[in-house]
Length: 293
Ligand SMILES: *[C@@H]1O[C@H](CO)[C@@H](O)[C@H](O)[C@H]1NC(C)=O
Ligand SMILES: *[C@@H]1O[C@H](CO)[C@@H](O)[C@H](O)[C@H]1NC(C)=O
Ligand SMILES: *[C@@H]1O[C@H](CO)[C@@H](O)[C@H](O)[C@H]1NC(C)=O
Image (cartoon, rainbow, N blue to C red; front, side, top):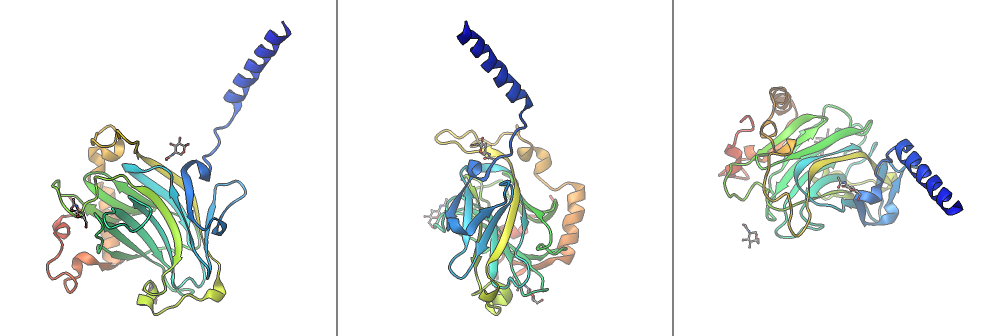
């Protein structure tokens, strides 16, 4: 009798807590692991903000535990402020943890600068180990003052890099087997901070001032709507139109996005490999695909 009553009380307690409990936000450990130097990683007290720091010893990086094929990937970042010349904060997707010879990769890199000088973002796209598809943009805000959202839309028709919902770069597929559009392998999402004063700021002229270390970039609000890759029979292999990121509307920019994109093209592009005929006397084939289609 006493046992039965206890059992009922336990049941009631269980149903009470499950209906009352607020769904806890995912913690870092649920979805990410540290790639290197655990001691250069910190979270806020509530676990929702993540800090990566770089000093003379080392930088730091994390990656998702899951990999994905196609979807919408988004995170808010606040970059190292003050004198950050030479420091690169990277936020990218890649098929592997490393610079392997057959990797696919989609990069956002934030190139620091001397105090008061503008940050640049560099984007790049690798397929099967080959990149050389750099673009550089200025931003229309100071990315060290507030959090801004950086996102990637990836489906079989286009890859679009967004800054606060503004499309800054569009990379189109041509619907054929090709060597420029990564679409076969699933990718993990990565983030890291490191010293790149041999190339990053004014082509390597500005060196990292280690007296200003540690350099800290902050991350929050990781959000992914994507096909999660599960070996050995991944559901994401066949492209379906079940998910919004695979659907017709996501195959090209909307009219509003086209206006934003045109404004970015006119005002913020510093470098575009598709315009660099000195480097590519014959421009790569993807350069002839229109971002407006
Ligand atoms: C994050 O981890 C949780 C717990 O393992 C999992 O259910 C969820 O699908 C993961 N989210 C993403 C976006 O991978
Ligand atoms: C990818 O690159 C590797 C090594 O560079 C090469 O052997 C292979 O044929 C390439 N695969 C495709 C599909 O182009
Ligand atoms: C840094 O600032 C200089 C001077 O304003 C500018 O020319 C350069 O493009 C900026 N960014 C980088 C990454 O060099």
